Length: 436
Image (tube, rainbow, N blue to C red):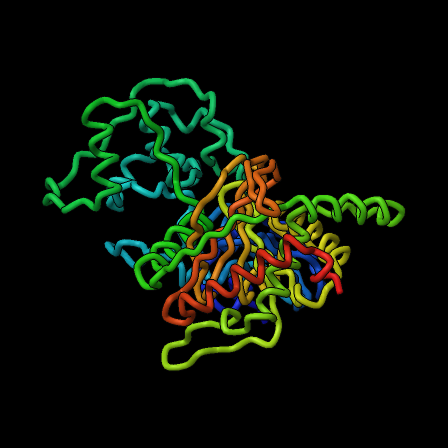
């Protein structure tokens, strides 16, 4: 009996994902534990393992397909001794559209973010007029790009599954005879455009050179969550200036002592520790708003903003208040490295009780960060710089940074936020206190 392989839910909140790459092909024999595919969620790329044994009878969803819903059949495995054609016949019959019916796509593959839907008949007309046995295989995006460039698909070699032509195959392809466009059955009624779409339309109307770049799943998630945060969470911002000279001196001494262990502390590692300890000292800020409840956390798990290609992710340093700074440094380096490779597990970036975002390395003096829901606070760290600073009632030159806390005013009162900022400042200016 054939086995349907379905798109897995790789996290509790996952509803769809991108089938980034197949690690097997049709006809391959697989066993339990073998890697089948790489699947991208909005934050990471994860490997998907086989549970059953058999032969890959048919791959239903090609690699590169986006927006594949959880539960969609992505492949079929035939059990040992089973006729492969029989194992896939049911799926083929089910996938085949009824006469005169418009086929419903199982998943979107390489569809531009702003492209208008193409009628089924127009798609058929755009394909080369050849017999069904010799029909050119190409993704919807490749067909549209070929039509726009005037490239004849029959002259392009496909690098996708089973020779399927994908977007990359059209790079450098030369235009041939113009491809006839299908005449629309009727002019569509004008539709109101959202602001972003209207801007794109205006750029085209006025002849402004531009490129339409499809949003990644990560960028869509960032846009949605931060928009919700600014719309739904009442932010309050509190800023303090903090002298760094003692912290920098201690960091140098600690690194000299840790050099034999291959550990090199960053300023950020010490600030993660300071925020964790400060949250324990002011537990009223280590909370989360939950409707008619307030969640009070017993430990400080700090989400640390890490910039990666295509967006931002916040891996979590768990129990930052109780970890030593060397352990924090080791954990943070590992998390940041795997975050940039898209290899974090969901539990390593989902959760956290508060966040820290450091833009000091970019020379940013001070900024106000957007709270990462459902958390109730985030600490924004600016650059340390030499400034005139009053020390012991005299004006001197000191290394000073500005730190701004963003607080969810539903959960944290201004006075409590101010106490947290004061505790954080004290710990950074007297760093031995957070190591005790």
